Image (cartoon, rainbow, N blue to C red):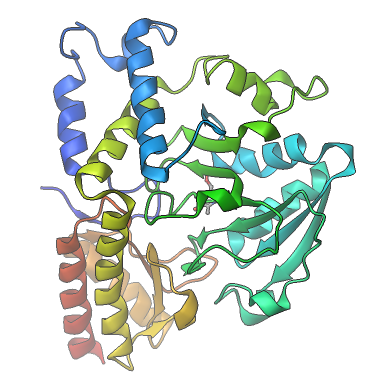
Length: 358
Ligand SMILES: *Cc1c(COP(=O)(O)O)cnc(C)c1O
């Protein structure tokens, strides 16, 4: 029996997609082989590359002004690759930081170029996103970097930050394809696939084509131009991961696309936040206006009860609820692929646990 999976990443995948993958694992229809066994340069594989790219294009409304790349190295490599490629010639970037991943992104960017901390909510314990009035943005910055959803703290921008003009670079690892975005505001979006769009080992990079410049000074593999020119086939990509991204995109479309996902996430997150707000036993970690629709973080009256909650919930088939060690407490990751039913089971469990321990 499958567990109720609240893992933060790698995380639950859509069951219909897993069934299809199982059916096609040994032999794809009419191809006599699995996707893992075919040349990445074959016409047969191109079909899967097209499906993944076009799925992302349809869902996000990407015009041909944007390139879609499938790279290795995780979102973590993009912390370096983005500034390496974009901050040549002394260009400047502003970073908005409201949690653990943003801290890392800024740290790596500062090794590569002129990256500046333009706003942080460190003093508020990373419980909310920066207030727009507190940001000191450089009007001539090449880009403003933000983390749309801080996975560890469970703190999400309710919408894109207002920059007054500079294009956005976004680490969207944990909320990509969970809601519509205003693509015109972005120059670059990157996301490790393992939270919302597929298995680990493939990173989606969406970049404005006029930002892609040949960079002979960079290692070939670290230049966006290399991968854009060769359509992610300069070296051998994660062919299986790309195949799955395509299937996940088609599954999202079958449920109403990004608007369908946003509705579904709002309902799921609402059930848990309502349970938190209705009780004095549970305390949400994030401030209300910055609450994540993807990672719901909460505390109990003391750490002993938190350990007990994590252990008992796991016995009840609800896995992955222990919070990240840097924040403590509990975290329910409720990505696109998590069905509403496990969330209802969790809320029932929370009520029962409070009755017994409150
Ligand atoms: C998980 C995560 C990362 C790290 O992703 P990797 O693919 O493991 O490098 C970066 N940013 C955010 C927001 C994440 O959730």
